Length: 204
Image 1: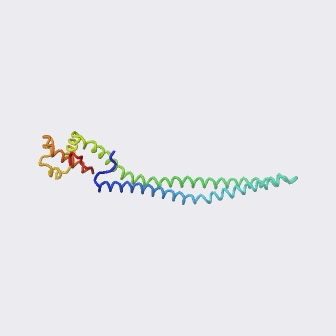
Image 2: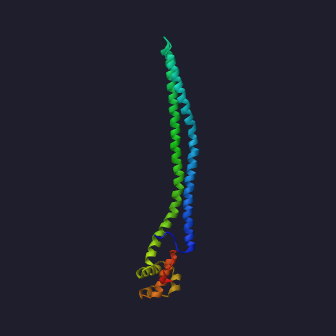
Image 3: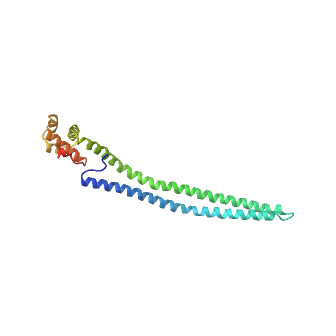
């Protein structure tokens, strides 16, 4: 697999592009963690409510237990404390639910902050890199065989601008059919350079 071009300028652009994509990905993940931390700060009141209400409920139930030991009227004294303890438990559950909701929201928000920019950048850049990988890998295999050189020359005839072809031969298609070796090698070299690859030694 050919990852980078042979020509220095194009190879430098590809390396810089890959580094930029990695840096963009790292920045997006870092930003997502910051967004998560900031959003999770909203869960602090819920945790505090849960903690305070839980403590209050325990103390109210302890008070109810103590009141229940009072002779004759213990049951009547303990009942309000039990009701108040239950209300405190309900408040604790509400605080816990709020904290859990904030946690879920923070998680999905962080995922969105990370994924959306990475996908957007990747969808623009990666198809170009994959196209080069496929094309360059195929060209590298072809440039080392006579049959491959012939195919590269034919592709140059089909895809290269007319001014490029006319600079090589007045009749590149005819020369290709006539097996004009110098012209075929020149056409193949043009096709390789267009892909950012150096011609094989045989073509230089």
